[in-house]
Length: 145
Image (cartoon, rainbow, N blue to C red; front, side):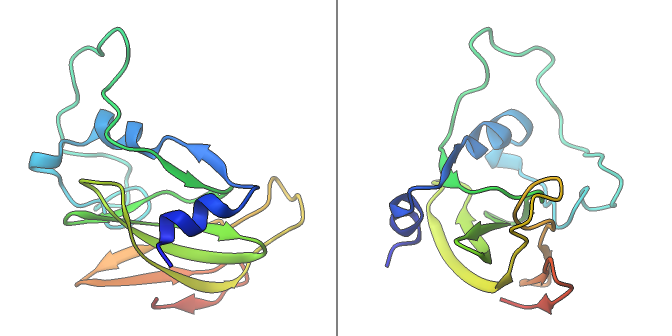
């Protein structure tokens, strides 16, 4: 089943405009990898150039993606972005094509937190290294989807 269709079929999905983030911060023609939480140097900085001023109606939206609650961010390697979200009570790692926003694959990792301890859902960011993706789940389970 197509990952995007599967995500949209679940009634509790939230509409998140991840495309805005990529359009505003990164240029697809000269995209630098952001392979882990807080970037390549784990310090939250980027060598990418931002616009000196924003368009009055905001950045151009490249695509949008339906996803549920989560507290992580994206890992970006090449033309793919990876993030962890949830479905029902499971954590799922997703891979998406940055150019189109289309889902490439999804891998169920483990159960997720359903108690409202600051919010429900996954709390980690995947790591992209050497063509592989590494994850760390809410219940301290490491994995390679």
